[in-house]
Image 1 (cartoon, one colour):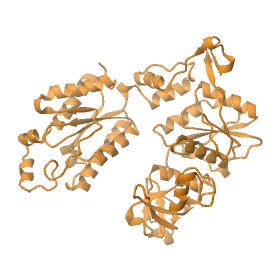
Image 2: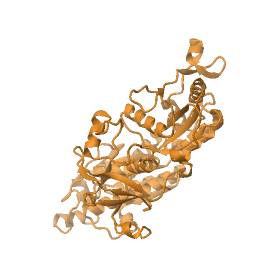
Image 3: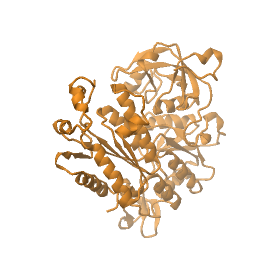
Image 4: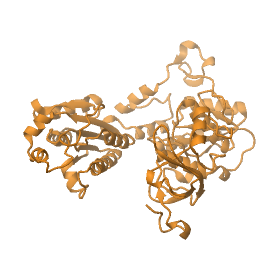
Length: 488
């Protein structure tokens, strides 16, 4: 792929590449100066030094490797246009080093990046600000870099720490999770509960591991925005600004307020609502208690995590040709419409082949592309609260994992392995495909001349040899009822 025609003549014929989500986030922060002193992607030695000791080759502290992976065919170019998912050019990479990751074998490019235009993709990009676009504040500045909404406990802790430091507050919603939009809305909803003048600047910063490196990275980002302190739950050494760990707070059931645990009679400390308990309430559609979080935050939580019986879901059937997966998938689609009134989209393998994937062959590359297309459509159905039922052969574990990741970024995913034995599938052979494959008329036929990789991560395994279609459908329905996706 070459860069789009809207570029200057000197760049128009350069190859172009769309980095993955984490690398796009790194690119945006590099271009904004947030990753100073870095000016581009790291080479092999710098990356190895960072991984081994948290420092660049010249000794400068830096917590995480910031690298760019590209296809092998791009590894030999001197310059490369980096673009967003819509193909909009964002920057030019001047390649200083081409190297191969010793662990993954991936091809990487290193070198400085030069901005072509400001990124305009992703939620709330108009609220994003470069450090040099913010008015400096006088005195201390407390940064709160968070991937979670602020509940009443955290709001009280922030006010307490800010008052003790005499600090202004900068909230940095860290984007890169499943519910970025809801996170920013939830933080905007509690702005009035934060110290006066608090600013909110969303940033694309996917989570890194281990947790200590993630805190150090947050501290570098906070320092770039002029923060003098970082609020965090983990006390870590070697941060760019001092980390402040707030003292424990609890809910005083006697006077019905949150305050430091040291000021509460131990008999009056109410047990905190755990993440697991909060998830259970949301899954069942029950209200989140007001003592735990402000109503506006509870409303955003409910939007981000609807009750299971209203949540988007993909049921992905996989199995050999003739295993019965299409029959069970059609029966499940009918049953859901009849008993639950859900919006159901059936993506059967043969129908998709005629419409969505017309023109594709049965080579491994084209079969993978067919399954990815099914996964993309399923993820969009799931994103909008519908139920997608898919029934391709999907023989390869890696491609099924890609589909799972696409769907789970926006909703729920269940894998059903229709594990009917090859002998039974071949005995049925309604379309005569196995006979043609045995005769060598169909190359790369799954189960005969091409492998089927049985899943190890299936939510349900069915062998339809001794089951009627209705019995198989009932087993899938039982799984959905037990999981809460369908009402009993």
